[in-house]
Each structure stands twice: as C-alpha cells, then as structure tokens.
Image (cartoon, rainbow, N blue to C red; front, top):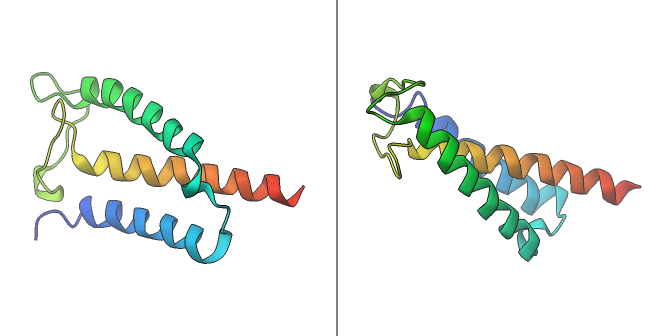
Length: 103
C-alpha cells in the first residue's frame, strides 16, 4: 500500500505531539499567538530549504514515491515533510515550555 512508509509515521507523529500537549503537558502553547507566528517563520524557511532539496528538476533528496502520499506542494515538497516538521518543532517547544514551568 502506498504512503505507509513515510505518510503514516508523519501523521502519527503529529497526532502524538498534539495528544501529548492536550492530555499530559498542558502548556497552553497552542493558544499563544507567538507559537503560531514561530510556526509561520519555520514553515517559511522550510519551504525555501526543503524546496531546494526536493525539487524534482534537480533533487538532492530523493523520495521513494511508493512510500509517500504523492502530494507535493509547493516546489515539489512532499507534504509529509511539513507534518514531520510540525511535530519536531512543536515537540521541542512543548518540552522547552514544560522545563521552563518547572523552574
């Protein structure tokens, strides 16, 4: 089945990070405009970098299309990269906030 190799873990990573915040950590990060602004900044730079790395005309990073959803936007970026990026950056910020609250 296509998409399970890269798509399923990408979706699961987002679900786990969101569930972690909503059920255990409860930092309130998702309610902060600064968080969403930082995510816009991250995505902006991710588009520039990932777009350059994955462009189909001269890719540096090559994906097995059988392992992705096949959705690429913008600049040929596999949509899964944005899911993993969201999960990674959000997890780091959540843990940072949690550590800050403990001090």
